[in-house]
Length: 346
Image (cartoon, rainbow, N blue to C red; front, side, top):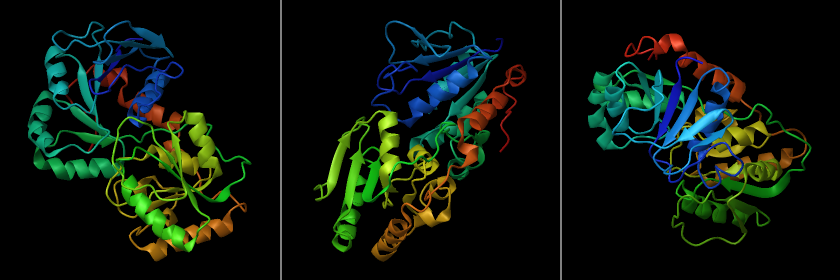
């Protein structure tokens, strides 16, 4: 259990853990952290420190969850520190822990102000792990010659996600993301599609962590609100497809796309946007969604194939087991014994 790992999250709006219901209303970043931490815990001492956790500690899934005081070194003296998204916090922790390896686990596209922080990361020996190859390549171009070492490990889907015998509704489409991820544009394109196919309905699952104006809600929209993960998977099993015909918000990974594909549900995605082409299990899912004719043609093709076979499949490299193995290899104690040597290979 030597060479402990501490994950540091200064951005989550409230404390969370792997306890039942503790992730409700939060996003894929927090759920992914919990999954990886719990898979690492049997072999390593794993701690998750959160700025939002002001009171009691928690122990679930072999992982200890505690508060965070950045004015002092972390009490567990970890060999490796993994910081979620925060480029400012990582160099500070590197100064407080000169013998530790420090990694920023980047889940989002950083803003322009972050570019100025890149030399500080490089000088402190901080490494960056992105959530897709697309994300990592973009970040290298964004930072240029000042970039620290950058690698990527995909976000994981559950090992046991597979298609079942749930009947697929050929008239049901599903949007399952926060509304800021292009839902207003999705509504307008659903309206146009519904004029050709009046029987279509669009179910909208909203995790509820961000209020966002989407304009008028079209006829045929079914508001689902916040769903527990098992309920959301049930809707993915029933729906004809994930309906994401928007070109305004780029995903760094797109966990719901990978999960839907794993249970046989395809996703209608904008080609070349973010990591869509990398995550979709086949390229028929990625089209020019500004072309209403192409959108209607793809929906019609999937409607005709409904019931004959799963319309999509899991990407095996996204399964939790191989992804956790990649994290275990990256964070192996031997690497932590030689900090600041950039174990990540560009």
